[in-house]
Image 1 (cartoon, rainbow, N blue to C red):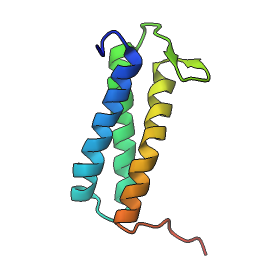
Image 2: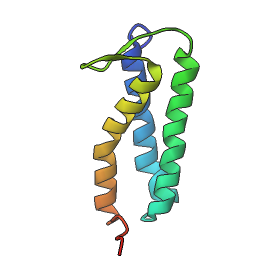
Image 3: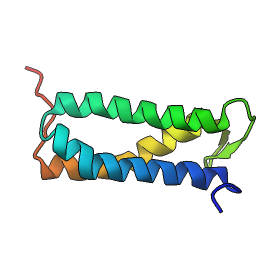
Image 4: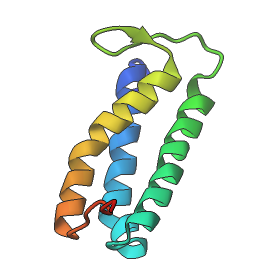
Length: 103
């Protein structure tokens, strides 16, 4: 099923990584520390891009983002960031994380 639909494959990958990091990795290793959270998020985002690239680099596969067609990189990055927003907001509320004030 996922092999025939590359968009579904990448969306399933995104959901899997998001559930893993927000339910296990971040609570265990980051807690309420915003710096650890951000650095681990860069690692998670890079992981998504590396896996997506290993699957679709050089294939010429076109992905549909509803408003435009893009390559694997942009589809993976944009869909991951959009899907991450609700997870991040919930996590930040649960652990009472606030952005540092600039004074």
